[in-house]
Image 1 (cartoon, rainbow over the protein chains, first blue to last red):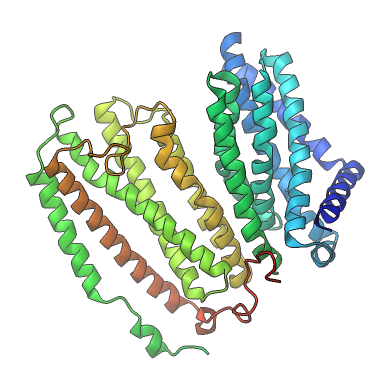
Image 2 (tube, rainbow over the protein chains, first blue to last red; image 1 turned 135 degrees about the horizontal axis):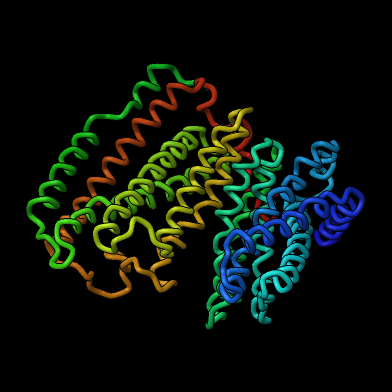
Length: 212
Length: 247
């Protein structure tokens, strides 16, 4: 029952994205603009540009999560679908479904940015960096889901950005360091702990956000 | 039932806490500025530690109070817990900002720079931003109960950053020194008199912080309609935190 609800929610959110193409229209241009402007603005030698690329990409992906977070709740309220969703799905299923669809979209955004960073900045992505991104994204997406539910309808993008960027710090640091430093295993452990804490916390408190 | 103004006035902070805080602050000043010796290498600048470390510890404790009160709000406790969460967050933000500014002044005299890209500095600044965000959520317009519940959610999520700040000096290779009081080693790396001055300073900051929180809570309670301070209706039988099988 739970997984059927989650699956239905993910398929619904992806179908809405396929129909509206809202994320497609906003996220890739944002990442492209960020990488291009950083490349010319930093004026770094190619080797140093390649070294900062992982951190830059994580920063851009976290920033791109802000418009995606609006889809968690505000878009549902705009469509008068939120009350229906709450009545049909358990809070945990709603959280998991929303976070999973966000996670997929953010992973695609990271993959797109990573490919661009190779072409534009000469970045190199060892397999452990890709693994770090895949591992970190569930925790990031869960936090984005919670903050989107808290703030998505209030039209306070600066506040939402502040919360998402700051709460995403462990993922940003660990994800970037896994790409450029030795001893990546320790960073993977930090990412795993971050995931567990983010998911367990959100699981416990998300029902409170639905009682409105 | 709505409480009367007399009952609410009866919970006004008593002066004992303020007096204790004042005595502790005077003792900390004497110990920190007169009794404790100057550090051999850093000189007088090291005395900034007697403000920097207690401010950071008071901030951590304040954020722990925000966490506890936020959980209580989500479990449907009285809105008085919400006032405690707000007051503690304001204290924590102030103390974090003080620790950063003090640390910057100390760092300038010891390291020669106002700021460096050190894990402890960055994570502390991020912690400050998170709780500024929490206070931002508290300022959202709309139904106050809804806003306090949303702020409580952010209060719980934000606390995750506190252990990251504390352990950052152990997890990363940093310029910042490792923890002085809560150190992995059995004996603190500090002279006994310095340790005494530091502990009294921590006590003074804690008492002054507790006094501030009580005053601020009384002010918030006075500013709120009486019925808002009562328990959230129906929460005793249907907690907001739903566990498996509780529904």
